Image (cartoon, rainbow, N blue to C red; front, side, top):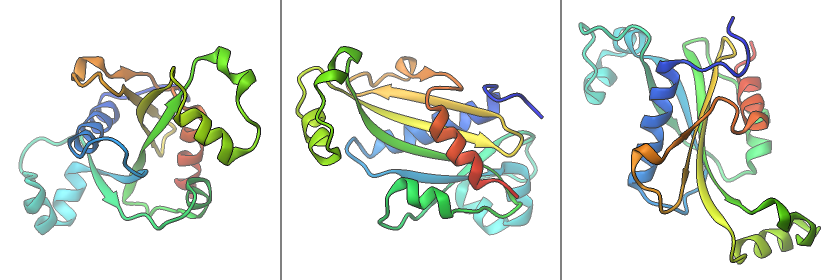
Amino acid sequence: MQRLGMSSPSLGHALSEIERHVADEGWDQPPRLYALASTGELAAREPELADRLGLDPESSTTGRLTPVEQELPERSLEDLLATITWPPTVVGCALAVERIVLPPDTEDSMPSEVAEAARWAAGHPERSDVRLVVGVLRDGTRSSVLRVRGHDDDTDLVRDPELAPDLADALEATLAE
């Protein structure tokens, strides 16, 4: 088992692929959840789906991951993640979310009531909008990519296994057997 905080090239690649897919549809999107399947196993198990996705079961897909988007009901993210479990064929999962980031020195002036704080943050002149994609595998491997609105080149992505450790922990709990 890899230590927490470790990343893998296949997971990092899958998260970058998810971020590009979400970015193609623009900003101001709700959270999006993805099952991560072994590409080779998916191609062998679901040949019709593999064909629709353009996966070649004969090609070398060892270690590659294929993200499969899941439909999400209208619920709070915290409540939703607490109820999700994955079948053994899912080797990991990922979540794309958008957040508002404020400079640390603004924390003291933030309202304490949640709805009021959200409105205050949304209108703050120093806010930054970010899209965060966090993923975890069953072995504890995790990775994250972050894009700041206005930085649209893929070289602008921030990659770090621990950008959102609490979110990664919540995703990892969905994989517990």
